[in-house]
Image 1: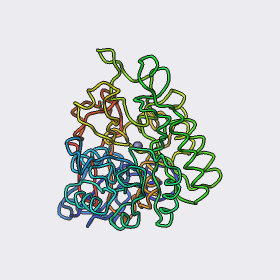
Image 2: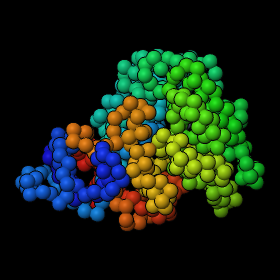
Image 3: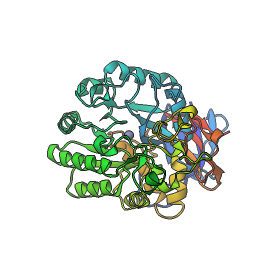
Image 4: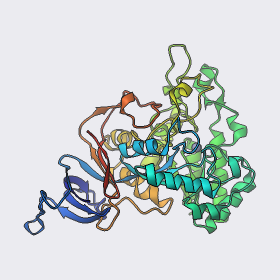
Length: 443
Ligand SMILES: [Zn+2]
């Protein structure tokens, strides 16, 4: 299929050049690749006949062309919990948000701690997935934190990283061994940093709100203790330590110091930890807290949120991740202490970052897109994030000018568990192409 994207705005930075200037281009896509990047208006020598040459012409006038986004952390729940989400619905949410690649977590049923389960995910993604799905393999068998999995076999089956996400690894020596073994295979270890002796079965951040509502709290130190451990082990082993969904000021400080020493440490942050804090959790009519604001790590204090924002704008953060973690409505309707951790995020991530950080002048658009594509991919050695001839035609077209409001029916996920419903945002996706095929078009 030959496609022309006509008259799109983008930046020379995203075309692989220097500078932040906005340029207007047209793109010719063939056999899944970008084959021509043309200046607009087209010079006479490059005039293309739009009527007969192309099977599809996308008029991108007024839209911004971005490389397809990559999300370093999603939970697609398949196999085992398809009532919450499956690879088809999860990837539908991804392309609706402009994501063309996602890295999926291994806490499925069965756990992705063996080659068969990983092979099933790879196969399912190729048949029902709308975007590229890169699986990760469990660090320990059954995520039990006792015995390491066979990293080499998992890698051969297709995993791009090792992680027990959903849980922290409590055994220090097991974690250190994992960093060492993954290093030999060139893979990062992704850490859900949580010392369970300090999180103590809590439901929200331990602070003013947990005390006021008499809800068991998760100490901020439950994260930073493990982040400090990971940074230290990374320095000792040379292994690549990646901090998933960072949420506290203390963790960020430890990462900042480890990076300054040259350790192979990377970190991602999620839009909800950048934009919300524990004080924002709404109280329902029955007087209890709304579980659609419950995730792990939890929404922290206001000063932690501000530390996340500072880390984003001063360059400590390597990537933005949604931690898209869908649950069924009946599960999230429960009392906040009983409801499961997790909210969705794929459909709103780009618009949230664009509206709150780019439009307000806190973050350059190129930087924001790099954090959601090129730099996010680099954590896993996945090359993406540039609009260049020869590259995969993984692309997104956003409307940066017209506001839209997030409603429950806006979501493509099976879940609507989002704290951002009713927000008015900028940056709605109009088209998403994966390997040159249109996988999402706003009707
Ligand atoms: Zn996690």
